[in-house]
Amino acid sequence: MNATWPLVRLTINQTGIAIEPSSRATAPLLQVFGLSDIKFGWAEIASIHPRRSKLPPWLLSNGICLSADGKELIWWAASRANAQEILGDVESFVPGKVTLYP
Image: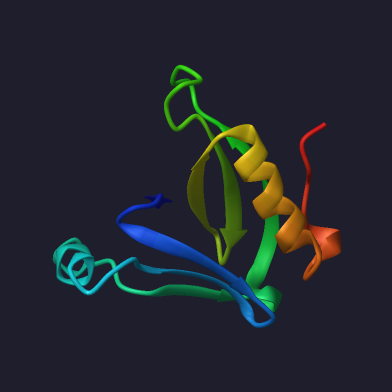
């Protein structure tokens, strides 16, 4: 799955990572596509690493890829700095599972 703001929001806390609708207005739209709240506990996550797309840099070309239960979730963070900040936040909870930018 690929996700980004403004349709959904990324939440990182002590229990894990969640992708949720960003508002009540977007929730029904996401349900039409079979997407509701997606939550992963830290124990479920196999790895988290930077992801770059082949899009031009001014588009959503930097993100993080989360691997869990044989599936991948890509959160497009727009800039490399945003992606690096997210990776740093995640690393504080699961340091052995995060690969940072070189």
